Image (cartoon, rainbow, N blue to C red; front, side):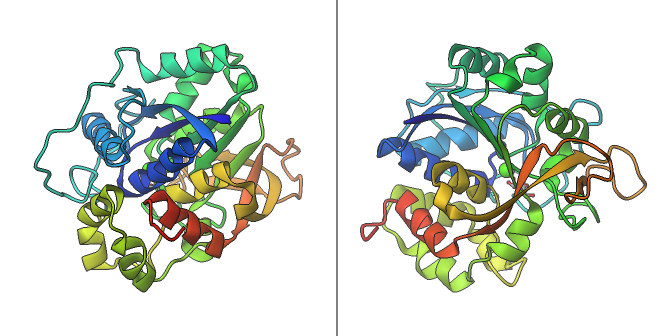
Length: 317
Ligand code: BDR
Ligand code: CA
């Protein structure tokens, strides 16, 4: 089974994505080696607590959790995006404290460097938040990038459509310099699930969210319904938008990606409106750089829906 580390900023869709990874681990499709945490959707402390709650719901508390970067490399982000709520979990109330027994002392960046060094060419790294931990790992160990087996990133945008500023996607916006460092140092096959993939190509109906995904009798489903109660009530978009789940699904089952394309991509670090925007040289080689990322262009939605239900332990899948 392939070894996977998930770096995340849970986050509601991070939780749902972790359920996919957890299920794949439980059935032996992969070995979930660690969860590393970063700032992003909420404070690092909240992220750690949210990851622990998610692992408890998946009955997988033994997976080690590592605390990572608490803020971005250069410009701290003001966390005023109401989408995930002040706790990152939709301002949901929980009766019990999270189980933090498997929270490790070692810093997430050191753990990433160590685990990848111990398992050269074996680790699939999936990044679901700002890329601060990855950039620091690349700076700490110049072999880190080349020792990775593959990298999946939810982040960036391919058409200049932003979801937090006019032209930047949230994860890249939170730490543009980290995203820049990561994209400049890629040395393994790297797959990007962009914001526009989520927005245009992977849409799910609210009816499916509520009456299929939301109707499973399991702890994982109860957690998703609890933390997404406000999202469901507010219906920010016409459809139920998923993000981090797309990157994990691609890492679990290659059949899920039905079309991808190889390009050179980097990140805009300045600009009045464009800081944090991913910039893609669409195969035109205008900037003369070697292509570094596969953009995920199309996905199999029917397979994805099955995987999402499977991740909640739905009986019929
Ligand atoms: C990304 O930002 C966060 O809000 C989500 O968890 C996802 O990782 C989408 O832009
Ligand atoms: Ca996330």
